[in-house]
Length: 203
Image (tube, rainbow, N blue to C red; front, top):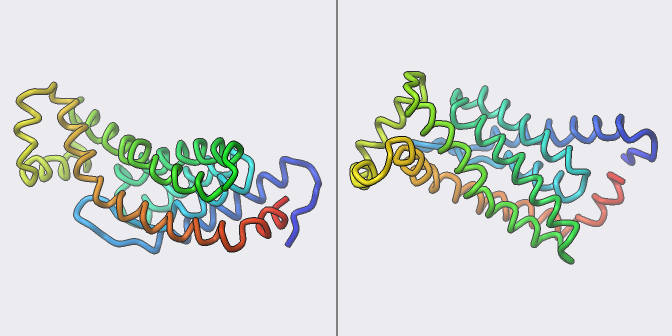
């Protein structure tokens, strides 16, 4: 289905609907871990960032965060992750315009989720708890403080808010690593095999 060359706004809305729906669908392919839920939800976001105008990937990231929040029941993880994926989409889109091979933009963009996705989750939970929140995000952080031996070490040398942020970032990294590996594999395969055809189709 070729979207044609009509007005830019309807085309943008159509692309957001397509990739946002795909991100919602792909968030359901997830693995539940103690802290974090690796899924393929950022694959459509990466593809949108490479193949479409920047707003498509950004909005798809927010949609993915909303969808995963409902699916997993962990909005304190998934909504910040959605914002982080939206930032990843911005970087991936910029890189795809500057690098000769779009697959490089895919890889670098996904690796940036260590900063953006893990960072946003850690920043939100760490600051929320440090500011006195007693919501659902407080429970996993308290459990992490008991599970991670280094948490007491960090807490003794750093301000509580910074220590909490680092504890969450370290705890979420294994889940994000699995997610990055899976999403790089699928996204890179799609771009390598069908990237040019998809670009023509979505043009």
